[in-house]
Image (cartoon, rainbow, N blue to C red; front, top):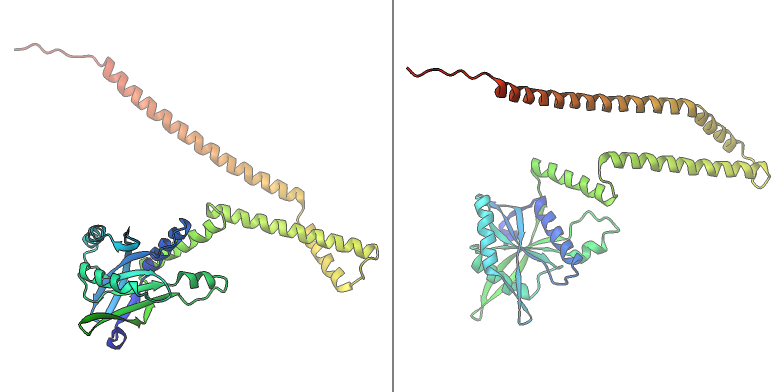
Length: 303
C-alpha cells in the first residue's frame, strides 16, 4: 500500500488550477461526462511532486469511452521534451471515489504510460458546489494508489487513499497571487486597479449621501413630533454636520480645478515635446536628403 510505504505526495497549485479550469469548461459547455487528464511531475525516493497536468481526449464508441492513445503519446512526448525532469505520474478525473470503470482505464494507462504504479487524483466537483456557500477550507481532492492482486487467475485493482499536502515554490506563489487578484478584479467587473479604486470611492460617496438623507429624514420627524427626541443622537448628528461643514464646496472646487489645470498642463507639455521631437527628426531627414541631392560631384580624369 502506498500509505504504508510512507509516500510523501506534494500537489502544486498549477495542477489544481488546470483541473478546475477543465471542470468549469465542461460545465459551461453543458457536458455531463467526467473530465480526464494526465499528471506530470518528479519523484525522488519517497517524495512525489505533482507539478503539471494536461487534458486527455476520450473517444465514444459503442456507448463506451476509450482513450485516444495517439493524442496521449504525442502530448506526453511534447511535455517531456519541454520538461525533461518530469515523468508521467498518473491521471485525474472527477468523482467522490473511484468507479468500477476506472479499473479498466487505470490498467490501460498503466500499459501505455510507462509507469507501473500510476496515481489517480479525483476531484469531487459536486461537493465543491455544495460547500461553496460555506467557504470550506478543505479541498475536495483525494489521491489514490492502486494495488493489483491476482485472484483466481484474474487481476483485481484495489484503491488505497494516499495523504497529500499542498506545496508551492516561490514562483508559483507569485503566479497564484496574480491569478487570484485578476480573478477577484474580473468577478467584480473591474478592468484595472484605477477603475477599482474610483469605483470604491464612488460607492463610498453614494453610501455617505444615503446616510445623510436618513439623518435628514429623522431630524424632520423629530421636529414635527413624529419621533422622540434623543439628546445623544442629536449631539452625534450635530458633530456630523460640523464635520461636513468643515469642507467647503468652493475650496474643494478650487482645489479640483487647480489639479485639473496642472494635469492638463503636463499633458500639453508632453504633446509639445513629442511634436518638437518629430519635427526635429523630419528636419534631419530632409537635410540629409537635400545634401545628398545637391552635393557637387567631382570627376577625376583617368590617367
